[in-house]
Length: 378
Length: 231
Image (cartoon, rainbow over all chains, first blue to last red; front, top):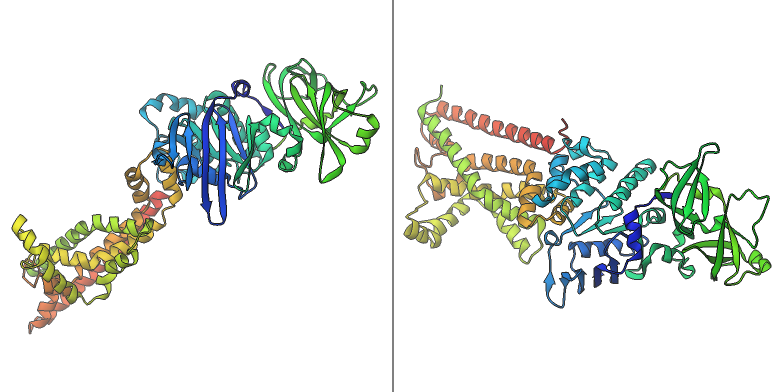
């Protein structure tokens, strides 16, 4: 898993504290009760993750104004979208929130151009060309929506939402229903969007890979409640959340920068923020590009001293920060390492852990299998 | 080819039919939309009232119109005093009667068509900043044009053939309220006019057939325009 990283959004994580969206709502839907309390940062991509039926989409509908909460409030900055106690309810058309629905929902009787400009205020006119370029939809402008492919229609619907100049963009599983290559393609477009535009995005997904690729902030939703909300890397490194993050396959996300390419062996060198280097199969990215890489915990092995005669190309100096176990897998041990400023997770058998005598603070070499840098598909 | 009396009847029928559809269109659309998109108390009652002309004897409808809109009627009195308008025995009265009779047909077709418009598109439009009116006029209404056209033509055909309510409310005045069915009826009542009656009968069939074909064609054309119209 391997994704291009926007620089701005990355820096956004560091100063993540000013919130854009604050919500505290309750809504009963049949037997299901949504009871969410959440604040999200004013930049970058915040992902809402949860299984189907956990309440992600219901939450989105409340934020968009398509449903009313029974009780509670939602604010963007200090602007109330709804506040039951103050009797405030802004209808969707006055919220300035862009929504990209699961299905593209293009208007079948307007051409692509008409769809794009449907909600466009005069002040957004100047952005039209940029957004059309960014999403690669210029050749589609004269087409009718019925003639577009799934991926094209999604791109148009993203453009349509962006051209309303929203203060916040909500995306409800925008990649659902697309096949592998189309998914990858649309994800690239969305990633370039997050780096080019300064608009906070709330991204709903039940796909851990999508989220690892795109999110800066991760919110876990279970049974209608928010259980965790924190920066992505911090959530992924929480051993106690491993069961909830099941689908994430216990992996870490590292921020790196391309340093150079090794033509002869077809390799690419990446530098971590503390200057350590990783070598991966050649990537198509120019030196200086920031990349986010994903390393599954089971692809990280530990050694107490630098091993020689090994096929492990990548050895990082690291220190053990925490050791934990998972209740339902007694044979393995979860280890959280610090390397530079970043965290890396490893999963060892309990036997190796005991034999190596690992404890908190032990300096180790983290051996990373090169194959962990697989970047093929979502 | 046609006699002037025949022309009179045809043109008058067309005039009454078009006016009838014209005046029921705004309330027809509004009520279809209410029935298609909203839940409220008394919805079943409203639905029933709308459909009443379909099941009531037309003469009853005509009689009800007479006692409400006649010169002495509750609303008719008021209309006359304030606007000097008197509906009975005028072609406008015939248009009112025909319109009432045609109303359920328009609403039925229109409602089905409105219900078929995906509410998700309306929701999407509202998130793009469109208020209710804009959503209705740019999304809901254009997407239900096929049903609207079908409804209009059905209503028009019904108005053309309206007899009972018209004769009760607007009477059978040549050149004023004597539409095609009334003219035909009058000819049948007159000895020696069998041939003329037969001619009118054929004319009625031709006009009805034409409006059915036109409705089919328009609806298909509109549907086609809504779907893939790729350039």
